Amino acid sequence: MFRWLAVAALWVIGGLSFILVFLVSLWWLFLTVPFLLLAMVGTWDLLQARHSVLRNYPVLGHARFLLESIRPEIQQYFIERNTDGTPYDRDTRSTIYQRAKDIKDVEPFGTERNVNEIGYEFVRHSITAQPAPAETPRVRIGGPDCTQPYDMALYNVSAMSFGALSANAILALNGGAAKGGFAHDTGEGGLSPYHLEPGGDLIWELGTAYFGTRTKDGHFDPDIFREKSQHSQIKCISIKLSQGAKPGLGGVLPGPKVTQEIADTRGVPVGKTVVSPPSHNAFHTPAELCQFIGRLRELSGGKPIGFKLCVGSRSEFLGICKAIRETGIAPDFIIVDGSEGGTGAAPLEFEDHVGMPLTLGLMTVHNALVGTGLRDQIRVGASGKVANGIDIVKRVIQGADFTLAARAMMFAVGCIQAQKCHTNTCPVGVTTQDPKRFRALDVPDKTTRVYNLQRNVVDNAKQVVASMGLTSFDDLHPSMLMRTVNFNDQRTYAELYEWLRPGQLLEDPPLSWVEDWECARADTFVLTSAQLPDPSRRAPVYTEEVPLAV
Image (cartoon, rainbow, N blue to C red; front, side, top):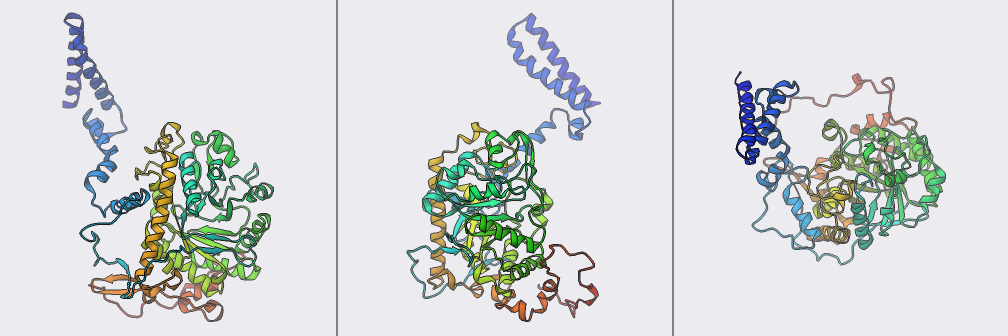
């Protein structure tokens, strides 16, 4: 009853002031309009049935929704500590911004991290530290069947499509790649004019919808691919099997964002929502994937062909390894995407609980290739929150040859982690197709920042390696990376994880790999229940009760 009386009082005050407008002065409008508006809002709140808060607290309840809408900004700017923010904490973001601006990024007074926390990682330095090498190493991409190998940088721009990113953001990223001599992955959205204009090296990514090289019914078009793949800027072609933040899901681009430019780039109708299939229709088995790799290599004139995936099942990847050996057709590179990777939008369940994190996925791929005798001819890339020099060093220790970054590069072009990527209202013009918003992104300035970030991150990685007493990234070893496993014990990666010997899976698979190795098939990705091993034959994992560490 009180709520109705309060709203009625607003109507009475508004009505009386409205009368005074005619009897006394027009100045009473300044009182009339607000009270009548509040009265109308309060009446609507009491009558609507959608929000219980507004029915119980008409007018005042809107303050809750207002505060909730700015909660991320309040949290980020006023509450969170330097090491608290997610997905990237403030210290990491600040370091990226400083390196992108090429200003001093040293920190005073010591680390803010809890170095005794379980899970904390550090590398072993050496008393005989070396000066950082002047030359920056590159990784040769190209197996025996590749006639146009490419020398990949240690740190590159990971996959982000035109459509997900604005034209100006793409121009800045590729301009930085051109200036710094590193690669820029196009993402699955096709090859746009903005990828080509600055002249930077490109990794052309083919997703499940084959954007930019598709038939009208969504199948791969070899003729279009042959023509486009001859472009001199395209140095590698990557088949996207899955993406870290949403493995098993196809992307969705809402119709309002499908402008004429995006439609031309992707080969789709203007203004219609575009949904990528969850898997490829050009192949359905590991052996067919290998055949598709061989076909792309032939159509492209011998350029490096590889694929990107977020690892889900170890046996599925081992099936690919078996298919490579059976067909004799190997990818030139494999990019491992971690489940902690970024995306414009994905269901929370997929972002949080589907797919292997990069550390586990990377070591799985590396060990599988080593165990099947394929590691020497296939290069491995790592993508997933690679933001600084120590990240590069750790990923190389875990099995990578080179790394790629998406969100760190977005920070370099102005991203402020507003997390509005899916709304087309990005406040800094990075992830929007609204020209009024992306015009704020100054391409020449952000081009320089992308170049600076890549150069400074690689330089810091070289310095870390030198501090370990090494002269080459090739000398890094799992025994050099430490992890705190409980309050009074630290272990190296060599001790914590199993590392296979070359060809070990072909000769004598270790017990921990036997089941996955036996399940792996070159003629199918997914096994039926009848093809899976009998769980009753599985040896017990624990033979005695193990007390928890205190």
